[in-house]
Length: 477
Image 1 (cartoon, rainbow, N blue to C red):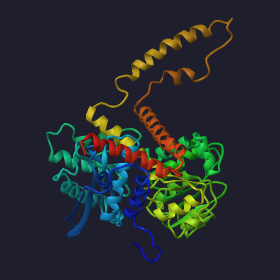
Image 2: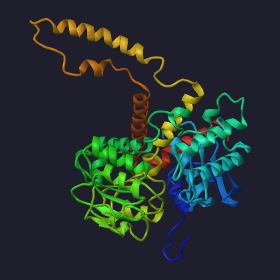
Image 3: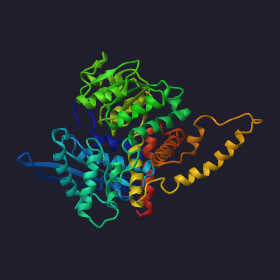
Image 4: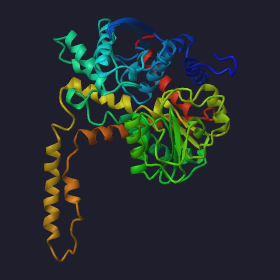
């Protein structure tokens, strides 16, 4: 703990939020402790010969809860990775999976590495060796522990890990299910890349359907015209900003990156900024008069919705009292510390918590895992039958429309839109939307229905912990 600011660490923040919720529950001390603690954390140190010498790397895989198996959680590549971080993230995965009813326990992994320092071939060698160390201990396995992408990793790394697993388990017919977030041509699923950002969009839509919740935030209406600041324009932040601006009419007024920020009350073209970052590695030099070198200050600008979508702890005791957003949605894991959370609640800022807000990734990962185990893509069996059934109705409507006495005709494009059966992407989006709606309602019922629950985070923990406790009780604990 930092004695200067009395700011708890990430793991302590998660525990404090957990404690606040279980204080409102009737759990036995033993069961409460069993749910809180991390079951196991494995630390691996391995060497890879690179650039003429042996380079040693340190990695982790933490398993928080095995109330359901397999356990699920991403692998991140970052210089900030340590045991405390992966254990906190594993705990959040437990609660996240329980909240959205994905049948997994919680896990997380990480490698202490800056992926920008290594070329693609070197990263492949490092990733395969890390995967080897985990696979041989069943810390990557379709029925026991299933990783996914996280900060610093993506489809490419997941494909390498899956291939490494299949090389070591040549007769495992379900080998592709050892990891999710793979490329489409390597057993992935449509919609997985943008799943977390899409989930943020669906979470906000669910919130704005909740009239009582919107009233508590001091806002009104829907997402159209809402001013949004996004911290972190990586995979999650980019897709969330893109969908919200293009499909919901929101205005992205601020974009914060590691080398500065852009702020424009009239709106920012997210696509152009993303292209600039991809080409130049940051937003510095972007042709916009609204560039600020001290990006963190933009967190404190006036806006309706603030989306922290990068690192944990960016909203903390030092800046929480200056946050002006009416609504914060935690697209990243742990972006608001426990101390900042208390300050913001006192200011009546509504926070949509990380365990719900960024659950789109694990939800679509669940769909991918099911697809890999069933060995068939979604929609393959029923899509054309659905189209044929719709064709009967279209044929009859077309016949009736030719009757001049009726005086009506089909709208343009109606036939094409109605006939088109649902493919994998449509089914994935439908499943994700349904998941986010149901999970939000489970939180809202507690938030609005109990006098002792004043915020969505506590409501989310109550729902999630209750489900984990029920699973342990069913096992006889």
